[in-house]
Figure: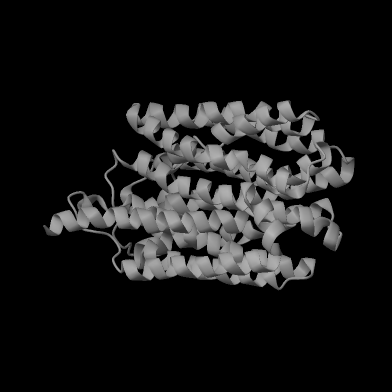
Amino acid sequence: MAEIGKLRFRWVVLGVSWFSWSMQAIALLSIGPMLTLLIPKLGLTGVQAGTLMAVSWIPGIFLAIPAGILIARYGGRKLGMLGLLSLAIGLILIAFSATFELLALARFILGIGVTFSGAPPLAWTIRCFTPQERGFVSGVLASGFGTGGIIGVFAMGYILSIFGIFLTAVSFGVLSLVCMLCFLLAQQEIPEISWSDSMPTNSTSFFEPMSQAFRNFELWKIGVVWFVIVGITTAYATFAPTTFVSLLKMDVASAAATAGIVSILAVPSLLGGGWISDKLKLRFGRKIIIWLPTLISAPAFYLIGASSVFFFAVIGIVLIGIFSWVSNAGVFSAASESVDSTVEGVALGFISFMASLGSFILPIVMGAVFDATGSWIFVWLVPAVTALAGAIIAFSSKI
């Protein structure tokens, strides 16, 4: 009976971690629809608009790898609680921000929350499942991010038009605190079930796990590919609503809803990608589910900036909605499986670092390109070319 209870508890872990991933997506991606209001209100430049997205990823650049090391010492549940508290503070501060500088500070604090509510709950969750289940479970967890994206992008335009930025930000900040309470009530870290002898143990040295993981060249390749995948997705969430307002002459709510089609398609794509990567031979399945979708994303991103006709823009949106997400579970599983189980947390922290780096660089570059050229075609060439480069690296790997 005790064993059955432990098996049931892992589904509780998956559920509350799914909640945390939904909250981080709402917090992160809602800035895109908000920018349609903030740009004219505050007179923001393209670089400033991109910076409000990018600044949320700065904490991940510096904290993601240490967070990965700390997972083995303090557990993903405790670190996840810290992340959710930071999300709440950042969201509530947005409600009171009337200048670019204060908004940037709020987004930075929110970024600390993203760092600790992402990889730690992921590590907490996948340790509760067997290797044969992890692709699908990672897809389920990532679908929480997709669901949060539906709210943070697709529905956010309508939410903002009804409640405004202040009430919207405060409400989601309170929801983050509710999620933190769920983590607290869960109480346990990892149920010691039949596969627990393969779980990581505390290292004798703080830096030893980092050294061991970073000697793995394949992990570096996986990290670069994840830099690309998350970076181009973040860039899309930042500038797609504004692009549709400009090129397709949409109102704010309609532009956000159109951009949010990507988030709606994310949920089945994330689940399907995880399932496929488990059903195929492990290495072959992980590779094909990462390489091919990234390649298909390249022309899709170009269509966003090149299309002045709604029909062609939707084609690009649908392709991005399927193929930017389907590889997520494969990346999580590949990173976990590329290293010894004792440094699994470091591997997940590393790919989180690379995601933060890509999400910091690409929105600013796209904003700078727009300031320099005023052309959305050139702006959207940035993620298109980046996706192509990522596909080449993924194809050359031995995932």
